[in-house]
Length: 104
Picture 1 (cartoon, rainbow, N blue to C red):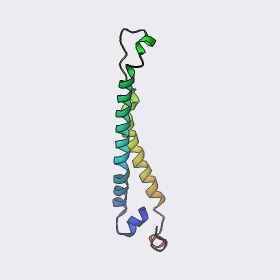
Picture 2: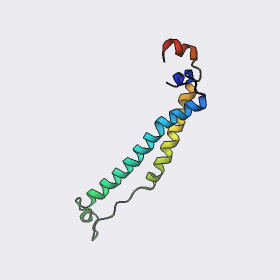
Picture 3: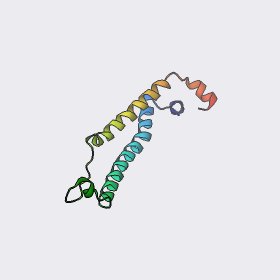
Picture 4: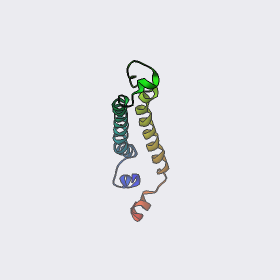
């Protein structure tokens, strides 16, 4: 797909931007929604599980997010950028004339 974009006239930099624009919003949205749903589910089930009986506390313990959960969003963004860079470097050797004849 990257070579086809190059055939229609996009520069390498623009192809990278298109690839990031296609992948990055979905990855970041999935990470944000997954974290939010996980936190909501943890809060929803902490009462019915009656964890105070297991912990010996007077009330139900509050759900606590691990410290590394905050770093998931920037780490995934960096992974997407790295994947796009590797994919683009792998396709750099593809000749545009062959893409025109083969159709992609």
